[in-house]
Image (cartoon, rainbow, N blue to C red):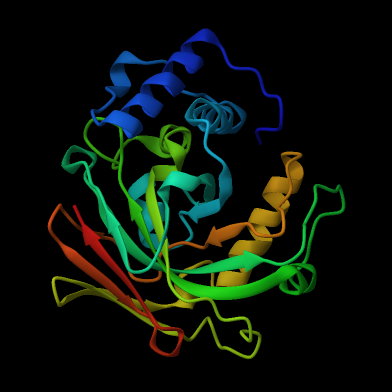
Length: 266
């Protein structure tokens, strides 16, 4: 697993520069024309180099590949994470620009906001530790896509990880602080595009329970020497599958008693 301070080769530094330029300005990167990461450490180091190049604050994390469908698409059997950068974090209702060539899609998922730090430590964290650190839960839509030519399928986990874990944007709905009694695993979520339902599911799609995604991330970041901080926002992976969107579309994720997340794509 990549740790703080992992050095980048010249080829991987070039990859980071190209991926950041494609995210900032549009365009795509041909994976056959770049140096690809060969290890988790290299893939995550590319992510953090992109964050450095952006000059933006890291507001939290997205976790992906937490559902069977997402793992199938990426050819993996484990989750992955990526930093959420400030310019790509939105409150609902949001207006979000899209690059059609990035093949954008949306996912309905649960997000948590930390009230306490979960610093790096050798012993790791359990569910009790993580629950005590969470301050609020919200519904969210993650907009995902790929700056890699041909989209996500067939690229493998490492290239997708390097490309920010496929994150385009994250829109978050109203926060609820009295969340502990909610049955998030059984909580239904529906996603609609232009008024037509495109997917539904429950929180159990994300590693069986969104809290278990948080435990996974806390321990991953602890091993990487980073940890998590109070105020971090974490999205926990799709509960609704993946639904394609394009500029001009209106998207809604309905979380019932947790409210709605609304996006107009431009």
